[in-house]
Image 1 (cartoon, rainbow, N blue to C red):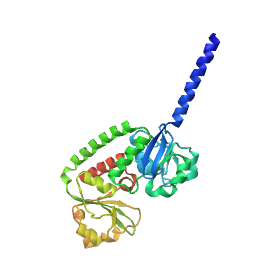
Image 2: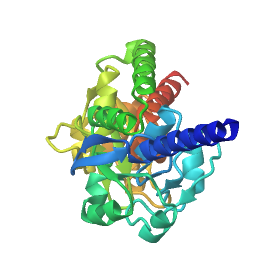
Image 3: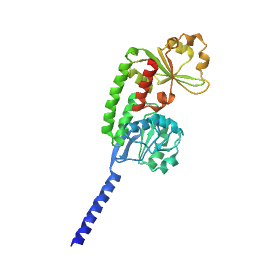
Image 4: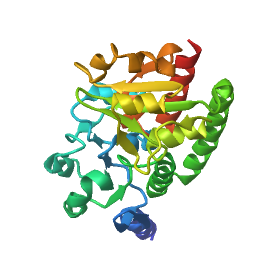
Amino acid sequence: MVVSMLFLLVGCNSKEASNKDAKDVTESISIKHEMGTTEVPTNAKKIVVLELSFVDALQGVGITPIGIADDNKTDMIEKLVGEKISYTSVGTREQPNLEVISSLQPDLIIADVQRHKNIYEDLQKIAPTIELSSRESTYTENIDSFKTIAKAVNKEAEAEKRLKEHDKKLASLKAELADEKGKSILTAVVRDTSFQGHAASSYDGELLETLGFEIAAKSNEAYVEINLEQLSTIDPDILVLAQNEGKLVIDDWKSNPLWKNLKAVKENKVFVVDRDLWTRYRGVISSEAIGDDLVKQLKD
């Protein structure tokens, strides 16, 4: 009888464990995203991300992805996260390696709708995939993506707490920048042949508006090509330059009187900043770092 009871108990425990395992595998949550609705496992642990802002989002709720489209630049991820982390590179953001992604056997893939719309079905064949706004997102859209990611990885409580901290941080930054309130600011990406200004509907444009600045580039588009004559007309109080390496279009501008007469130039408020931070990362953590960087630039 004792032996029979032991077998019965073992059988029950095995059945309970089996049921629990099955539950862990099969339980899912419906996540609405830019490409529709995807059933995502509630216990997703192995996550692959194909944009930098999604690394930021997961870090914000205490998760490290197993795979990242890092453009084959591990130093860029280390700078974003603030330390070295263990992950597998899945290629570039523009063209992620599907074979490597598949080899990781992810539970969830988070992709950018602007970059990865055309490979959505291929990604879905590998693992449940959600596509969100990142590359062309505004600051508000990025916060929405953060909330969606938190829901998908069962970290909504952590996300809510982090966003409260974020709001306090932005309020603190705005107070530190009170002397600059209402001043016009222009962020621009500077390349060898182009000067691309960021308008109010760009990610950093909306963020800087939140911090109390007026965005100097007036356009219905997020990004606008600007020549020296147009820059002279805009004439921002503060000029933030995220530059490529090597020869730049502004190299020739700097000897021109139009450049020399810019308010930002005359008042020494032209700042060269880290392009990764200001134009590539995006996210809760990164936006706070942008604010800190701007305070440092203006106070130095």
